[in-house]
Image (spheres, rainbow, N blue to C red):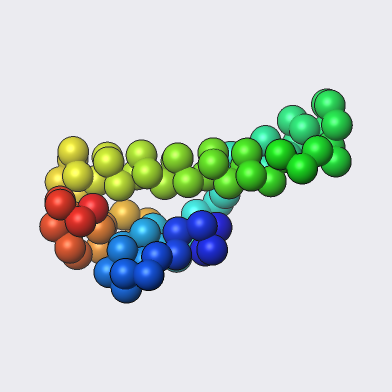
Length: 88
């Protein structure tokens, strides 16, 4: 996931990594990988699909924090509290 949120711009990289680095259970990619066992678990698309699911979830967390004007997410300052709504 780190490679996929990297950017040449340091602020963009830091903001994109913010919630990812805060941790989380990462159940969504696990559920996708377990579901793949019902078909062909060797397909190359499984890992990218799991990545898309988790990155989409993280994006919804940023959105929720902006909409709710949350100060904290996963025990850390929310992105909007740290950088403002425009960056978040």
